[in-house]
Length: 115
Image (cartoon, helix red, strand yellow):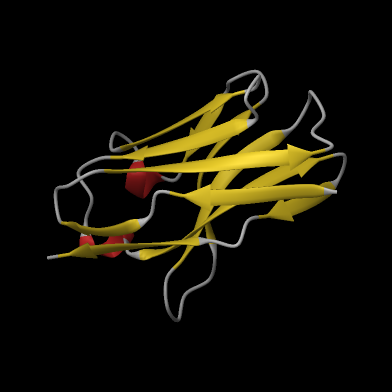
């Protein structure tokens, strides 16, 4: 059984920063992808950033240069550092783990950016 628990969301003014954390527990294999998705009201869930177990990263264009994804394999943690936040970044952010053709999701954490 895999569990993902996010933390670090909240309310921030435009231009501010937040750091999201995701703690993974259970059967985590050495080869996997971890990522952050977000879903704003009335919109589809979208991939924000992903990172392989080897450290290769990928970002959606709208966050490039502002967000940084990282992971600590020994601690089974993945992070999302979000800088220069914009109101359009407001969404519920979900941690995702993909391994052995299975997807796992956290419960989500709300990020609200005020203008």
